[in-house]
Length: 161
Image (tube, rainbow, N blue to C red; front, side, top):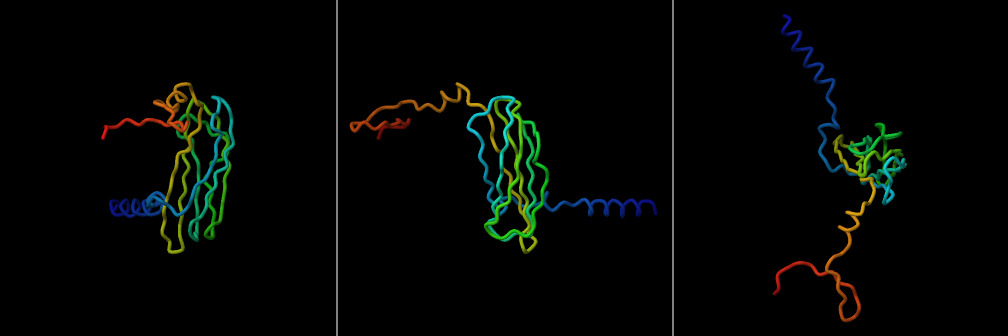
């Protein structure tokens, strides 16, 4: 009798704790837009506005933002649910972060439910950080030459034909 009770209780707990967003397929029909400064000093605080643009009509859009590495979340990023979005509707959240290392990432999540009840999810990583000397050197073009017209060309490695 106790085994049956435990089995029924465990099935009930498992059924109640089922989260549809956790089992959602990726590539939700929503565009995620944001802008961050090109360079941020370590210890600086920055506010980022993250926009979510519905590609189709949505019953529900659940969004959140969490610091991944090198960031501290000062405010925002909480789980927020929007309902009744039409195609092209824009919803936005503000996240205030502090850069704790030279480079940090903010994980942005979105889970959608369409009119048929299908659940899809999408996530992106937003990069924050400083641009160090090594990065500037890496970005500087090598093998730069000028052609006969004075245009600058970058020679790419390859085999001669």
